Length: 260
Image 1 (tube, rainbow, N blue to C red):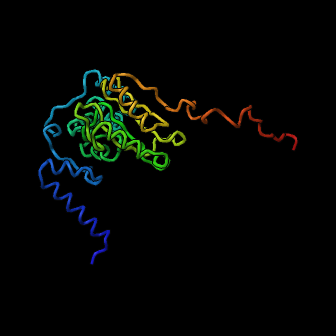
Image 2: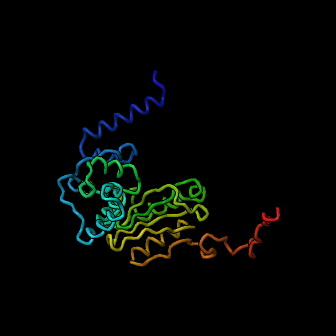
Image 3: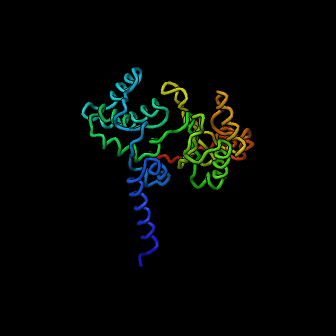
């Protein structure tokens, strides 16, 4: 008998092969598994035959981005160019956009696909105009990030990585956002104004009630205050103010090396 882990891997490989052979709907459904995110399946709105190019304004930004790199190292610009393409395309990267980036930096398309499939910041399926990312790393999880995500999904009536019917919102997960002292937190990637008005904001010390309020503010076209959502804190300071380190620190004692 094969060990349980071996049987599980074999089962997963079979599912992936079945997805390749099956209909696009079946294949797309299988993408909920992380291992399935490494391949592309053509669909009417995502295939190599779709025309795609940078807008006139973004063509100027492409030139500016390329100017940061030696002319024989254009490929080093792949990440900022993919980011720009994603902003222009409403928060996700169709394969034709990746092909356009490959043409700009003069590499084989596979070199761009390798980057886009590696970094979780690049979305290769549709997201909402407001893409809500919940931090799932341990400090946020301990402080209730699962409840935060559940509140968002229930309020919006979607599952993780689904888009609301009005196209406004989607909910995903991101690992450590780097502000563990203000856990739990979410990020909102705002693609509602295209690449010209794109913002990426952090909301910290959130609660299930507060994230729903943030969603409703975004629906109304308002801009929620970024950073900590706890009115008793200033940025990452302690709730209620400092209780230690209230004065200027004393300098360390110095030795007169010339007297030795």
